[in-house]
Every structure is written in structure tokens, then in C-alpha cells.
Amino acid sequence: MKFRSLLPLLVSLMAASVLYGQSNTIVDQLLNQKEALYAETAYLALVGGGRIEESATPADAYAKAAESGWLTANSAPDKPMTVRSLSFLLMKVFGLGGGVMYSILPTDHFAYREMVAWGVINGSGGPDRMPSGEEVVISIGKAAALIGGAK
Image (tube, rainbow, N blue to C red):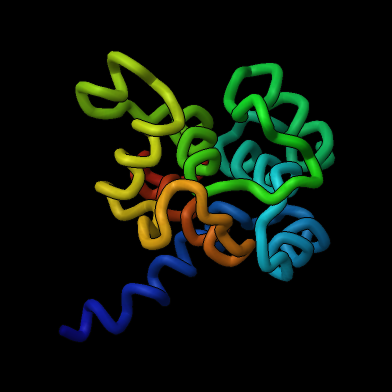
């Protein structure tokens, strides 16, 4: 019972370890977003996953994620991200393998289902819900914890 009450604190600490040393300005921008934008989300995920340097910009991170095929076709740097897109991005950035269906069809649909099952993503509201910046930071921390921390 006590563990459940400490869970939000532990998740926040994990997220903080992923974000250690990153630009406070970008972290603050994301935390203040009611609907997390693609560029800042891509930046934190890619830096946390060791895919880009901390000195990169959110625009650089978005471009790298788009080039790598980790973003949905209808994404844009200044557009709010969906939970479905966040799930796919995290699966790809952190190199997470999925279940049978994700292995056969590695799409954002099956990435969302995997991330909800693993407790990385809050599944309430469905896959097209737009997460807050705070939820994105927590989800990045949880995804990093699945592989043992930031790369």
C-alpha cells in the first residue's frame, strides 16, 4: 500500500534521471504545455535515448525522428502529439521490442497497445488523446526504466 503512494515520486525521479543535464528551457517549455508538441517531445525522447546530443535543438530532434520514420505522417513540429504517436516514438527511440502483433506490424497502433500494457502510457482517453508535457516527461522516464535508464 505504501509503495503505491510512493509510485508517482519514484516515476518523477526516474524521469529526472533521464533529463539530467538537459536544457532547462526546453524541459520547462514542455512541462508548461497542456498538449505536448512534437518538437519538444522528440527532443527529450531522443536525448534521453541517446540518439542526439543535448546541444541539439527541438527542430533538430524532430527532423531526426521524422527522417528515421519514428513519427506519424501527419506530424508537425508545432502540432500537439497524440498518445499513439508518443508510444511509437518511445518504442523506436528506446529500441523496445513488442509482442507478437507489434513484431509483425510495428505500427503506432500496436506500439500504443504495448505501452499501455507495460504501464508506460496512460491509456485512458484512447490513442488519439493529446498528452500534457508533464505526462510526456513521466512516460519518457518509464520507457527509460524499461531498458535500465538513459543510454
